Structure formats: C-alpha cells, structure tokens
Image (cartoon, rainbow, N blue to C red):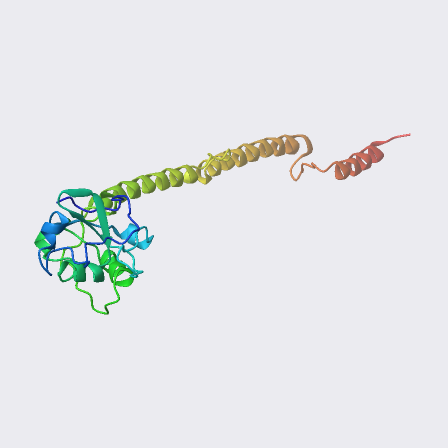
Length: 237
C-alpha cells in the first residue's frame, strides 16, 4: 500500500461514485464487492499542505468537506476516490482511518491532525491516527552540547588577541627627546660647575688688575656707567 506525502496529487473525479443502489464500497451491506469488481483500499492520506490548500473536495454527493484520503478499488486503480473523514467512516464502515498498523503512513504531525479535524469532518471529537510525530529536519537539529561553544571559544580568543594587539599598539609611546631627569640633572650640575670655575677665574683676574674688592660687571648699562666714570676721573686737560 503506497504511503502518503504532500506531493500525492492523483487526478480527481468530481462525479459522485455510484455503486448500484448504494454508496457503500466495502461490502458491508451485501455482496457489493463482487458486483463492483473488488475490495476498496486506502491508498493515501493527503498531506497537511494539500488539506490546508483544499486541493481536493470529498466526492460523496452533497458533502462539501475537504478530502483527506484517497481510496482505490482492486482492479480499478486508475480511478481514485477522494473522501473526507466522515464519508469514509460511513462508506467503508471504519472508525477514523482504520487500524494504525494498516495505514499508508507511519508518522503524522500535530498540525496534520488539526487540519483534518478542522476541514475534513463535522465531528467535534474525530478519531485520529495514533502515530508518532515526524523526526525534525536536519537543518533544524540543535547542535550537540559543546559544539557551538568551541567556535565561540575560538572567536573569543581571536577577539581577545585582537584587543591585546590594539592595546599593545596604543601603549607604545614614542621616546621623548628630553633625557630622563637623572641624566638631565647630572648635565645641569656639570654646567653650573663649569660656570662657577669661569666666574672664579674672571674674579681672580679682576682682583689682580684692580686689587681686592674688584668686581665683575656683566650688565651692559652698568658697565657703561663705570667706564664713563673711570674715563672722566682719569681725564687731564
């Protein structure tokens, strides 16, 4: 018995399938199987997307519900019969879709059952197949524990390395042209000692020329006054 999927789209026969004076197709009311040519079998359960889109209507007269299953008669498989849940229970003397073990599918999603109950029956509590949920698609499977963390750890290390490199670059300071205080201090002391030695040498020369108490004048204006006074005092007419 073929299984059902969303791509099952056999051609639909919009005419009500007549079986003599009765619509019963499983021989429950007599020897209709012999008269009609063979047993009726459930070939497929229409997929959730087909029911949602209402691609096929139930072929029973004056039904008006959306079809949820496809039935075929032995020896006449080229003429599928589209049925809703209510009509197949009546026509084939079954409850729901019949025994779960005989169904053409082995799994059924909750949404699939919901659509059948909503569009394919007028019963408030229809009998649904007791089938497990289908397995999730590969792209919807959660990664094994730790798998995502490995990539995250690598990314964190890379980010930390990048931040460390930036920090290292930011902390690199261009050396200042001014020497450290210790070096500068030594040079300053040496310069002061040299100046003192020069001044002492000049003072000795001044005292040698002018006697004790002679002083060195480095200010230009003061030196002019002293020179002018000295020339004035030493001038003889």
